[in-house]
Length: 582
Image (tube, rainbow, N blue to C red):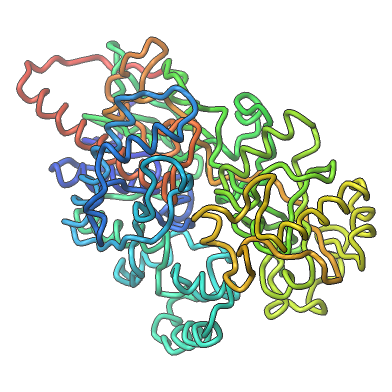
């Protein structure tokens, strides 16, 4: 096939990993192209919380964190064999990546967010890093609305952007939350100039802030971005070196030369049911994922496998509990809602279909999903499980997409939701019958939870008895902020599915982000980062930002490795190679 155009580096995917790979490559003086199959850029990263887990970052009092304490913590949490060199490369390179990104002009703040295993050796509460609110219009009015927009769950009333502080104030209905909401709404409507361009809030928060600030630097360096451009296959020469790729745009196919490297940063495979069935012990359904619909279907992984690339940790996902509701204003469509923190609030309990608990409901959302998988493999009575709560919970907290009564009173809940998506009854026994759970078991479980709420101690799973649990509890509920009696009618239940934030496994890579074949040899010219690559953490989710942190870090590492390769090639004799496509 005739090569249409030539670049030094072609990056597949426009999320955090791809943006960083492009930015760093450009700063190495390389000509870079990003191809993105979607109509908007920013990937899943732009829709996320935008947190990066960076050990030893040195910001805001983190100066006493160390390489050794980070590795001690990771060693205490990872439960499967991992590539030690790659793990150590992450711990070493993540602070360097952050320092580099700061040097370009991107600002960061350290978040007081406990590691997800706060009782393990080496755990801390300051390794998560966020980007402050970014003015999206700094990207330019032609680009500002082209970044992926965050889900409604990250916006007040589906319109007004919320930063993390505002999110928690509204989520917990803490003192002054109505004032916070009023300021957000007023700020939006007073910005008349922006509303002439788009309905979108110019305030980019959370994942949009991270990606907006990063892409401001990417675009400033002249990196080209092509949307609606899908990877069809990778091209190799007679020596097995990846030399480019074939892409398509609205059915038109053409080839691109990548003189020094292709970086696969196209996300995981959570929207590919065939790959889920192949890899996962309990596959679950694509539609339970909380990532952009049909966004990550594993095309880049499949293309690399055709060249002999190997995979690892593919039995793992970045799990998060989700629930499903009809999409308002759109007939016959459904929306997926995260329930990461809802399941651990006071005045509630989660049970499997035997009517019994199986986990500390307030644990990290990935741990919750892993518990769902284990319980289903053991009992066959999970997937979904059930969140049961009372009227006190209903007044104050969300249950997935069911907002608290201050936002969505009973009279505003659509009639077709009741007894299909949300179930309600005047007694726990009647509720159990409605959702076909064993009445006696559910009643005993609720009675036990009420006793635990009185004592403040959960002897079964330790709910509310560590720093991470308590961060998302309710301080008004004493003596344990994650426990409260489930005793006020009416009682409610919603089914909870094992959703995800993407896939944890992917292409096997080395410490330089090079994709490895089945024998463990690097495939020349091919690199991977983000969820396209297997997590360096194996089966664990060490802390908030453990997806984006490695994505940005190994995008940075890949660019550095390519630059080093370029330098080596410039000092070696040039050999012309015939190109062949596989």
